[in-house]
Image (cartoon, rainbow, N blue to C red; front, side, top):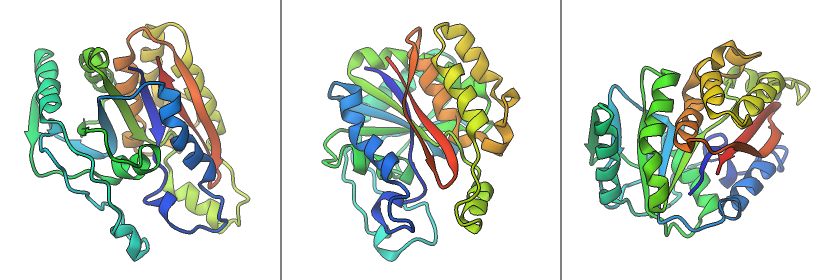
Length: 266
């Protein structure tokens, strides 16, 4: 299986009205094409979402996680969305074993639901909710090298029918997006960082790629794009799990002024 870093949009953005109406159309179209881009049907999806951090790594262990509506101020109907995908306790145990072999502490938790970084894009990409999904947290220290190492530990899952998805957003500066809205759509941003990120992520030398991602904060426009890097680090897990597979850009669009991308490995 490949690994893929996707944008998940803003809150429940694909399931509500926007002005202009086409605001999220390009991203939604990409997510609808995602199964075709993957090219094979995953047995299980392991998802690393920007919206879950732990002091140690945490992995869902339940058979049927609930939904966690971890967004605020949206229309009432967006808190009634459903996505009844099952979990996979066997894969949860496998994840914990792989990480513990690399001296990573892991907690299997039974009370953590699917956050919107999972169910919002998954509801678009695989609306049937027929693929088991297991979420894995980020580490709260947000260390980029650690997240590449986490991905490296998970690499064997790819040969076991498991699709690893990093769900974030390659530009995540809410203050800037607010400026776009206040400017009537005149402000644009993120181009320099997006150009760097695509070049760094898709270079042929995997060691150079991973080192560039470790040093991401030195890139042009890096801290403008990510005042806090939780929406970027799911990419690092995907890059680590990619091994020597070269990345390719599978999506690019400007949404609410921000240029963003998706990257697929393998």
